[in-house]
Length: 166
Image (cartoon, rainbow, N blue to C red):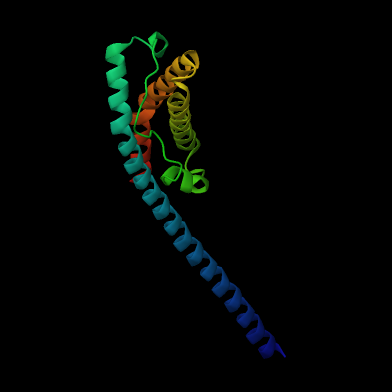
C-alpha cells in the first residue's frame, strides 16, 4: 500500500505542478500580449491626435492672431472641415483605453471630449448662423474655447502616449 500511495501522491503533485506551471506560463504570455496591444493602441492614438493636431493647431494659431480670447469674437466663424470623427481610434477602443494609467485615460477623455464638443458647436453654427446670430456667436466662442483647451494639452498627451508606446 505504501508504494501505491507514494505513486499516487507523486502523480497528484506532478499534476498540480504541471497545472501551476501551465497557468504561470499562460499568464506571462497573456500579460506580454496585453502590453503589446497597449503599445500598439498608444501608437495608433498618437497618429490620430497628430492628424487632428494639424487642423486644430492651424485654427487656433489663426484665431490667436485675430483675437485675444474666444470671447472677443463678434461674428460667427464657420469651419468647413470636420473637427472630430466618432469612428476614430479613441471611440472604437474606449474600453481598452481605460486600462491605461489614470492620468493618460483622463487626458485622452478630456481631449476627445473637447473635440466632440467643438464639432457639435461647429455643426450648430452651420445650421443656425443665418437664423440666430447671437447663438451662432456663442457657439463660435465655445467651439474656439474647446479647441484652445484641446490644443493646450496636445503635446502633453502625445508625450504620455509615447511613454506608453515604448
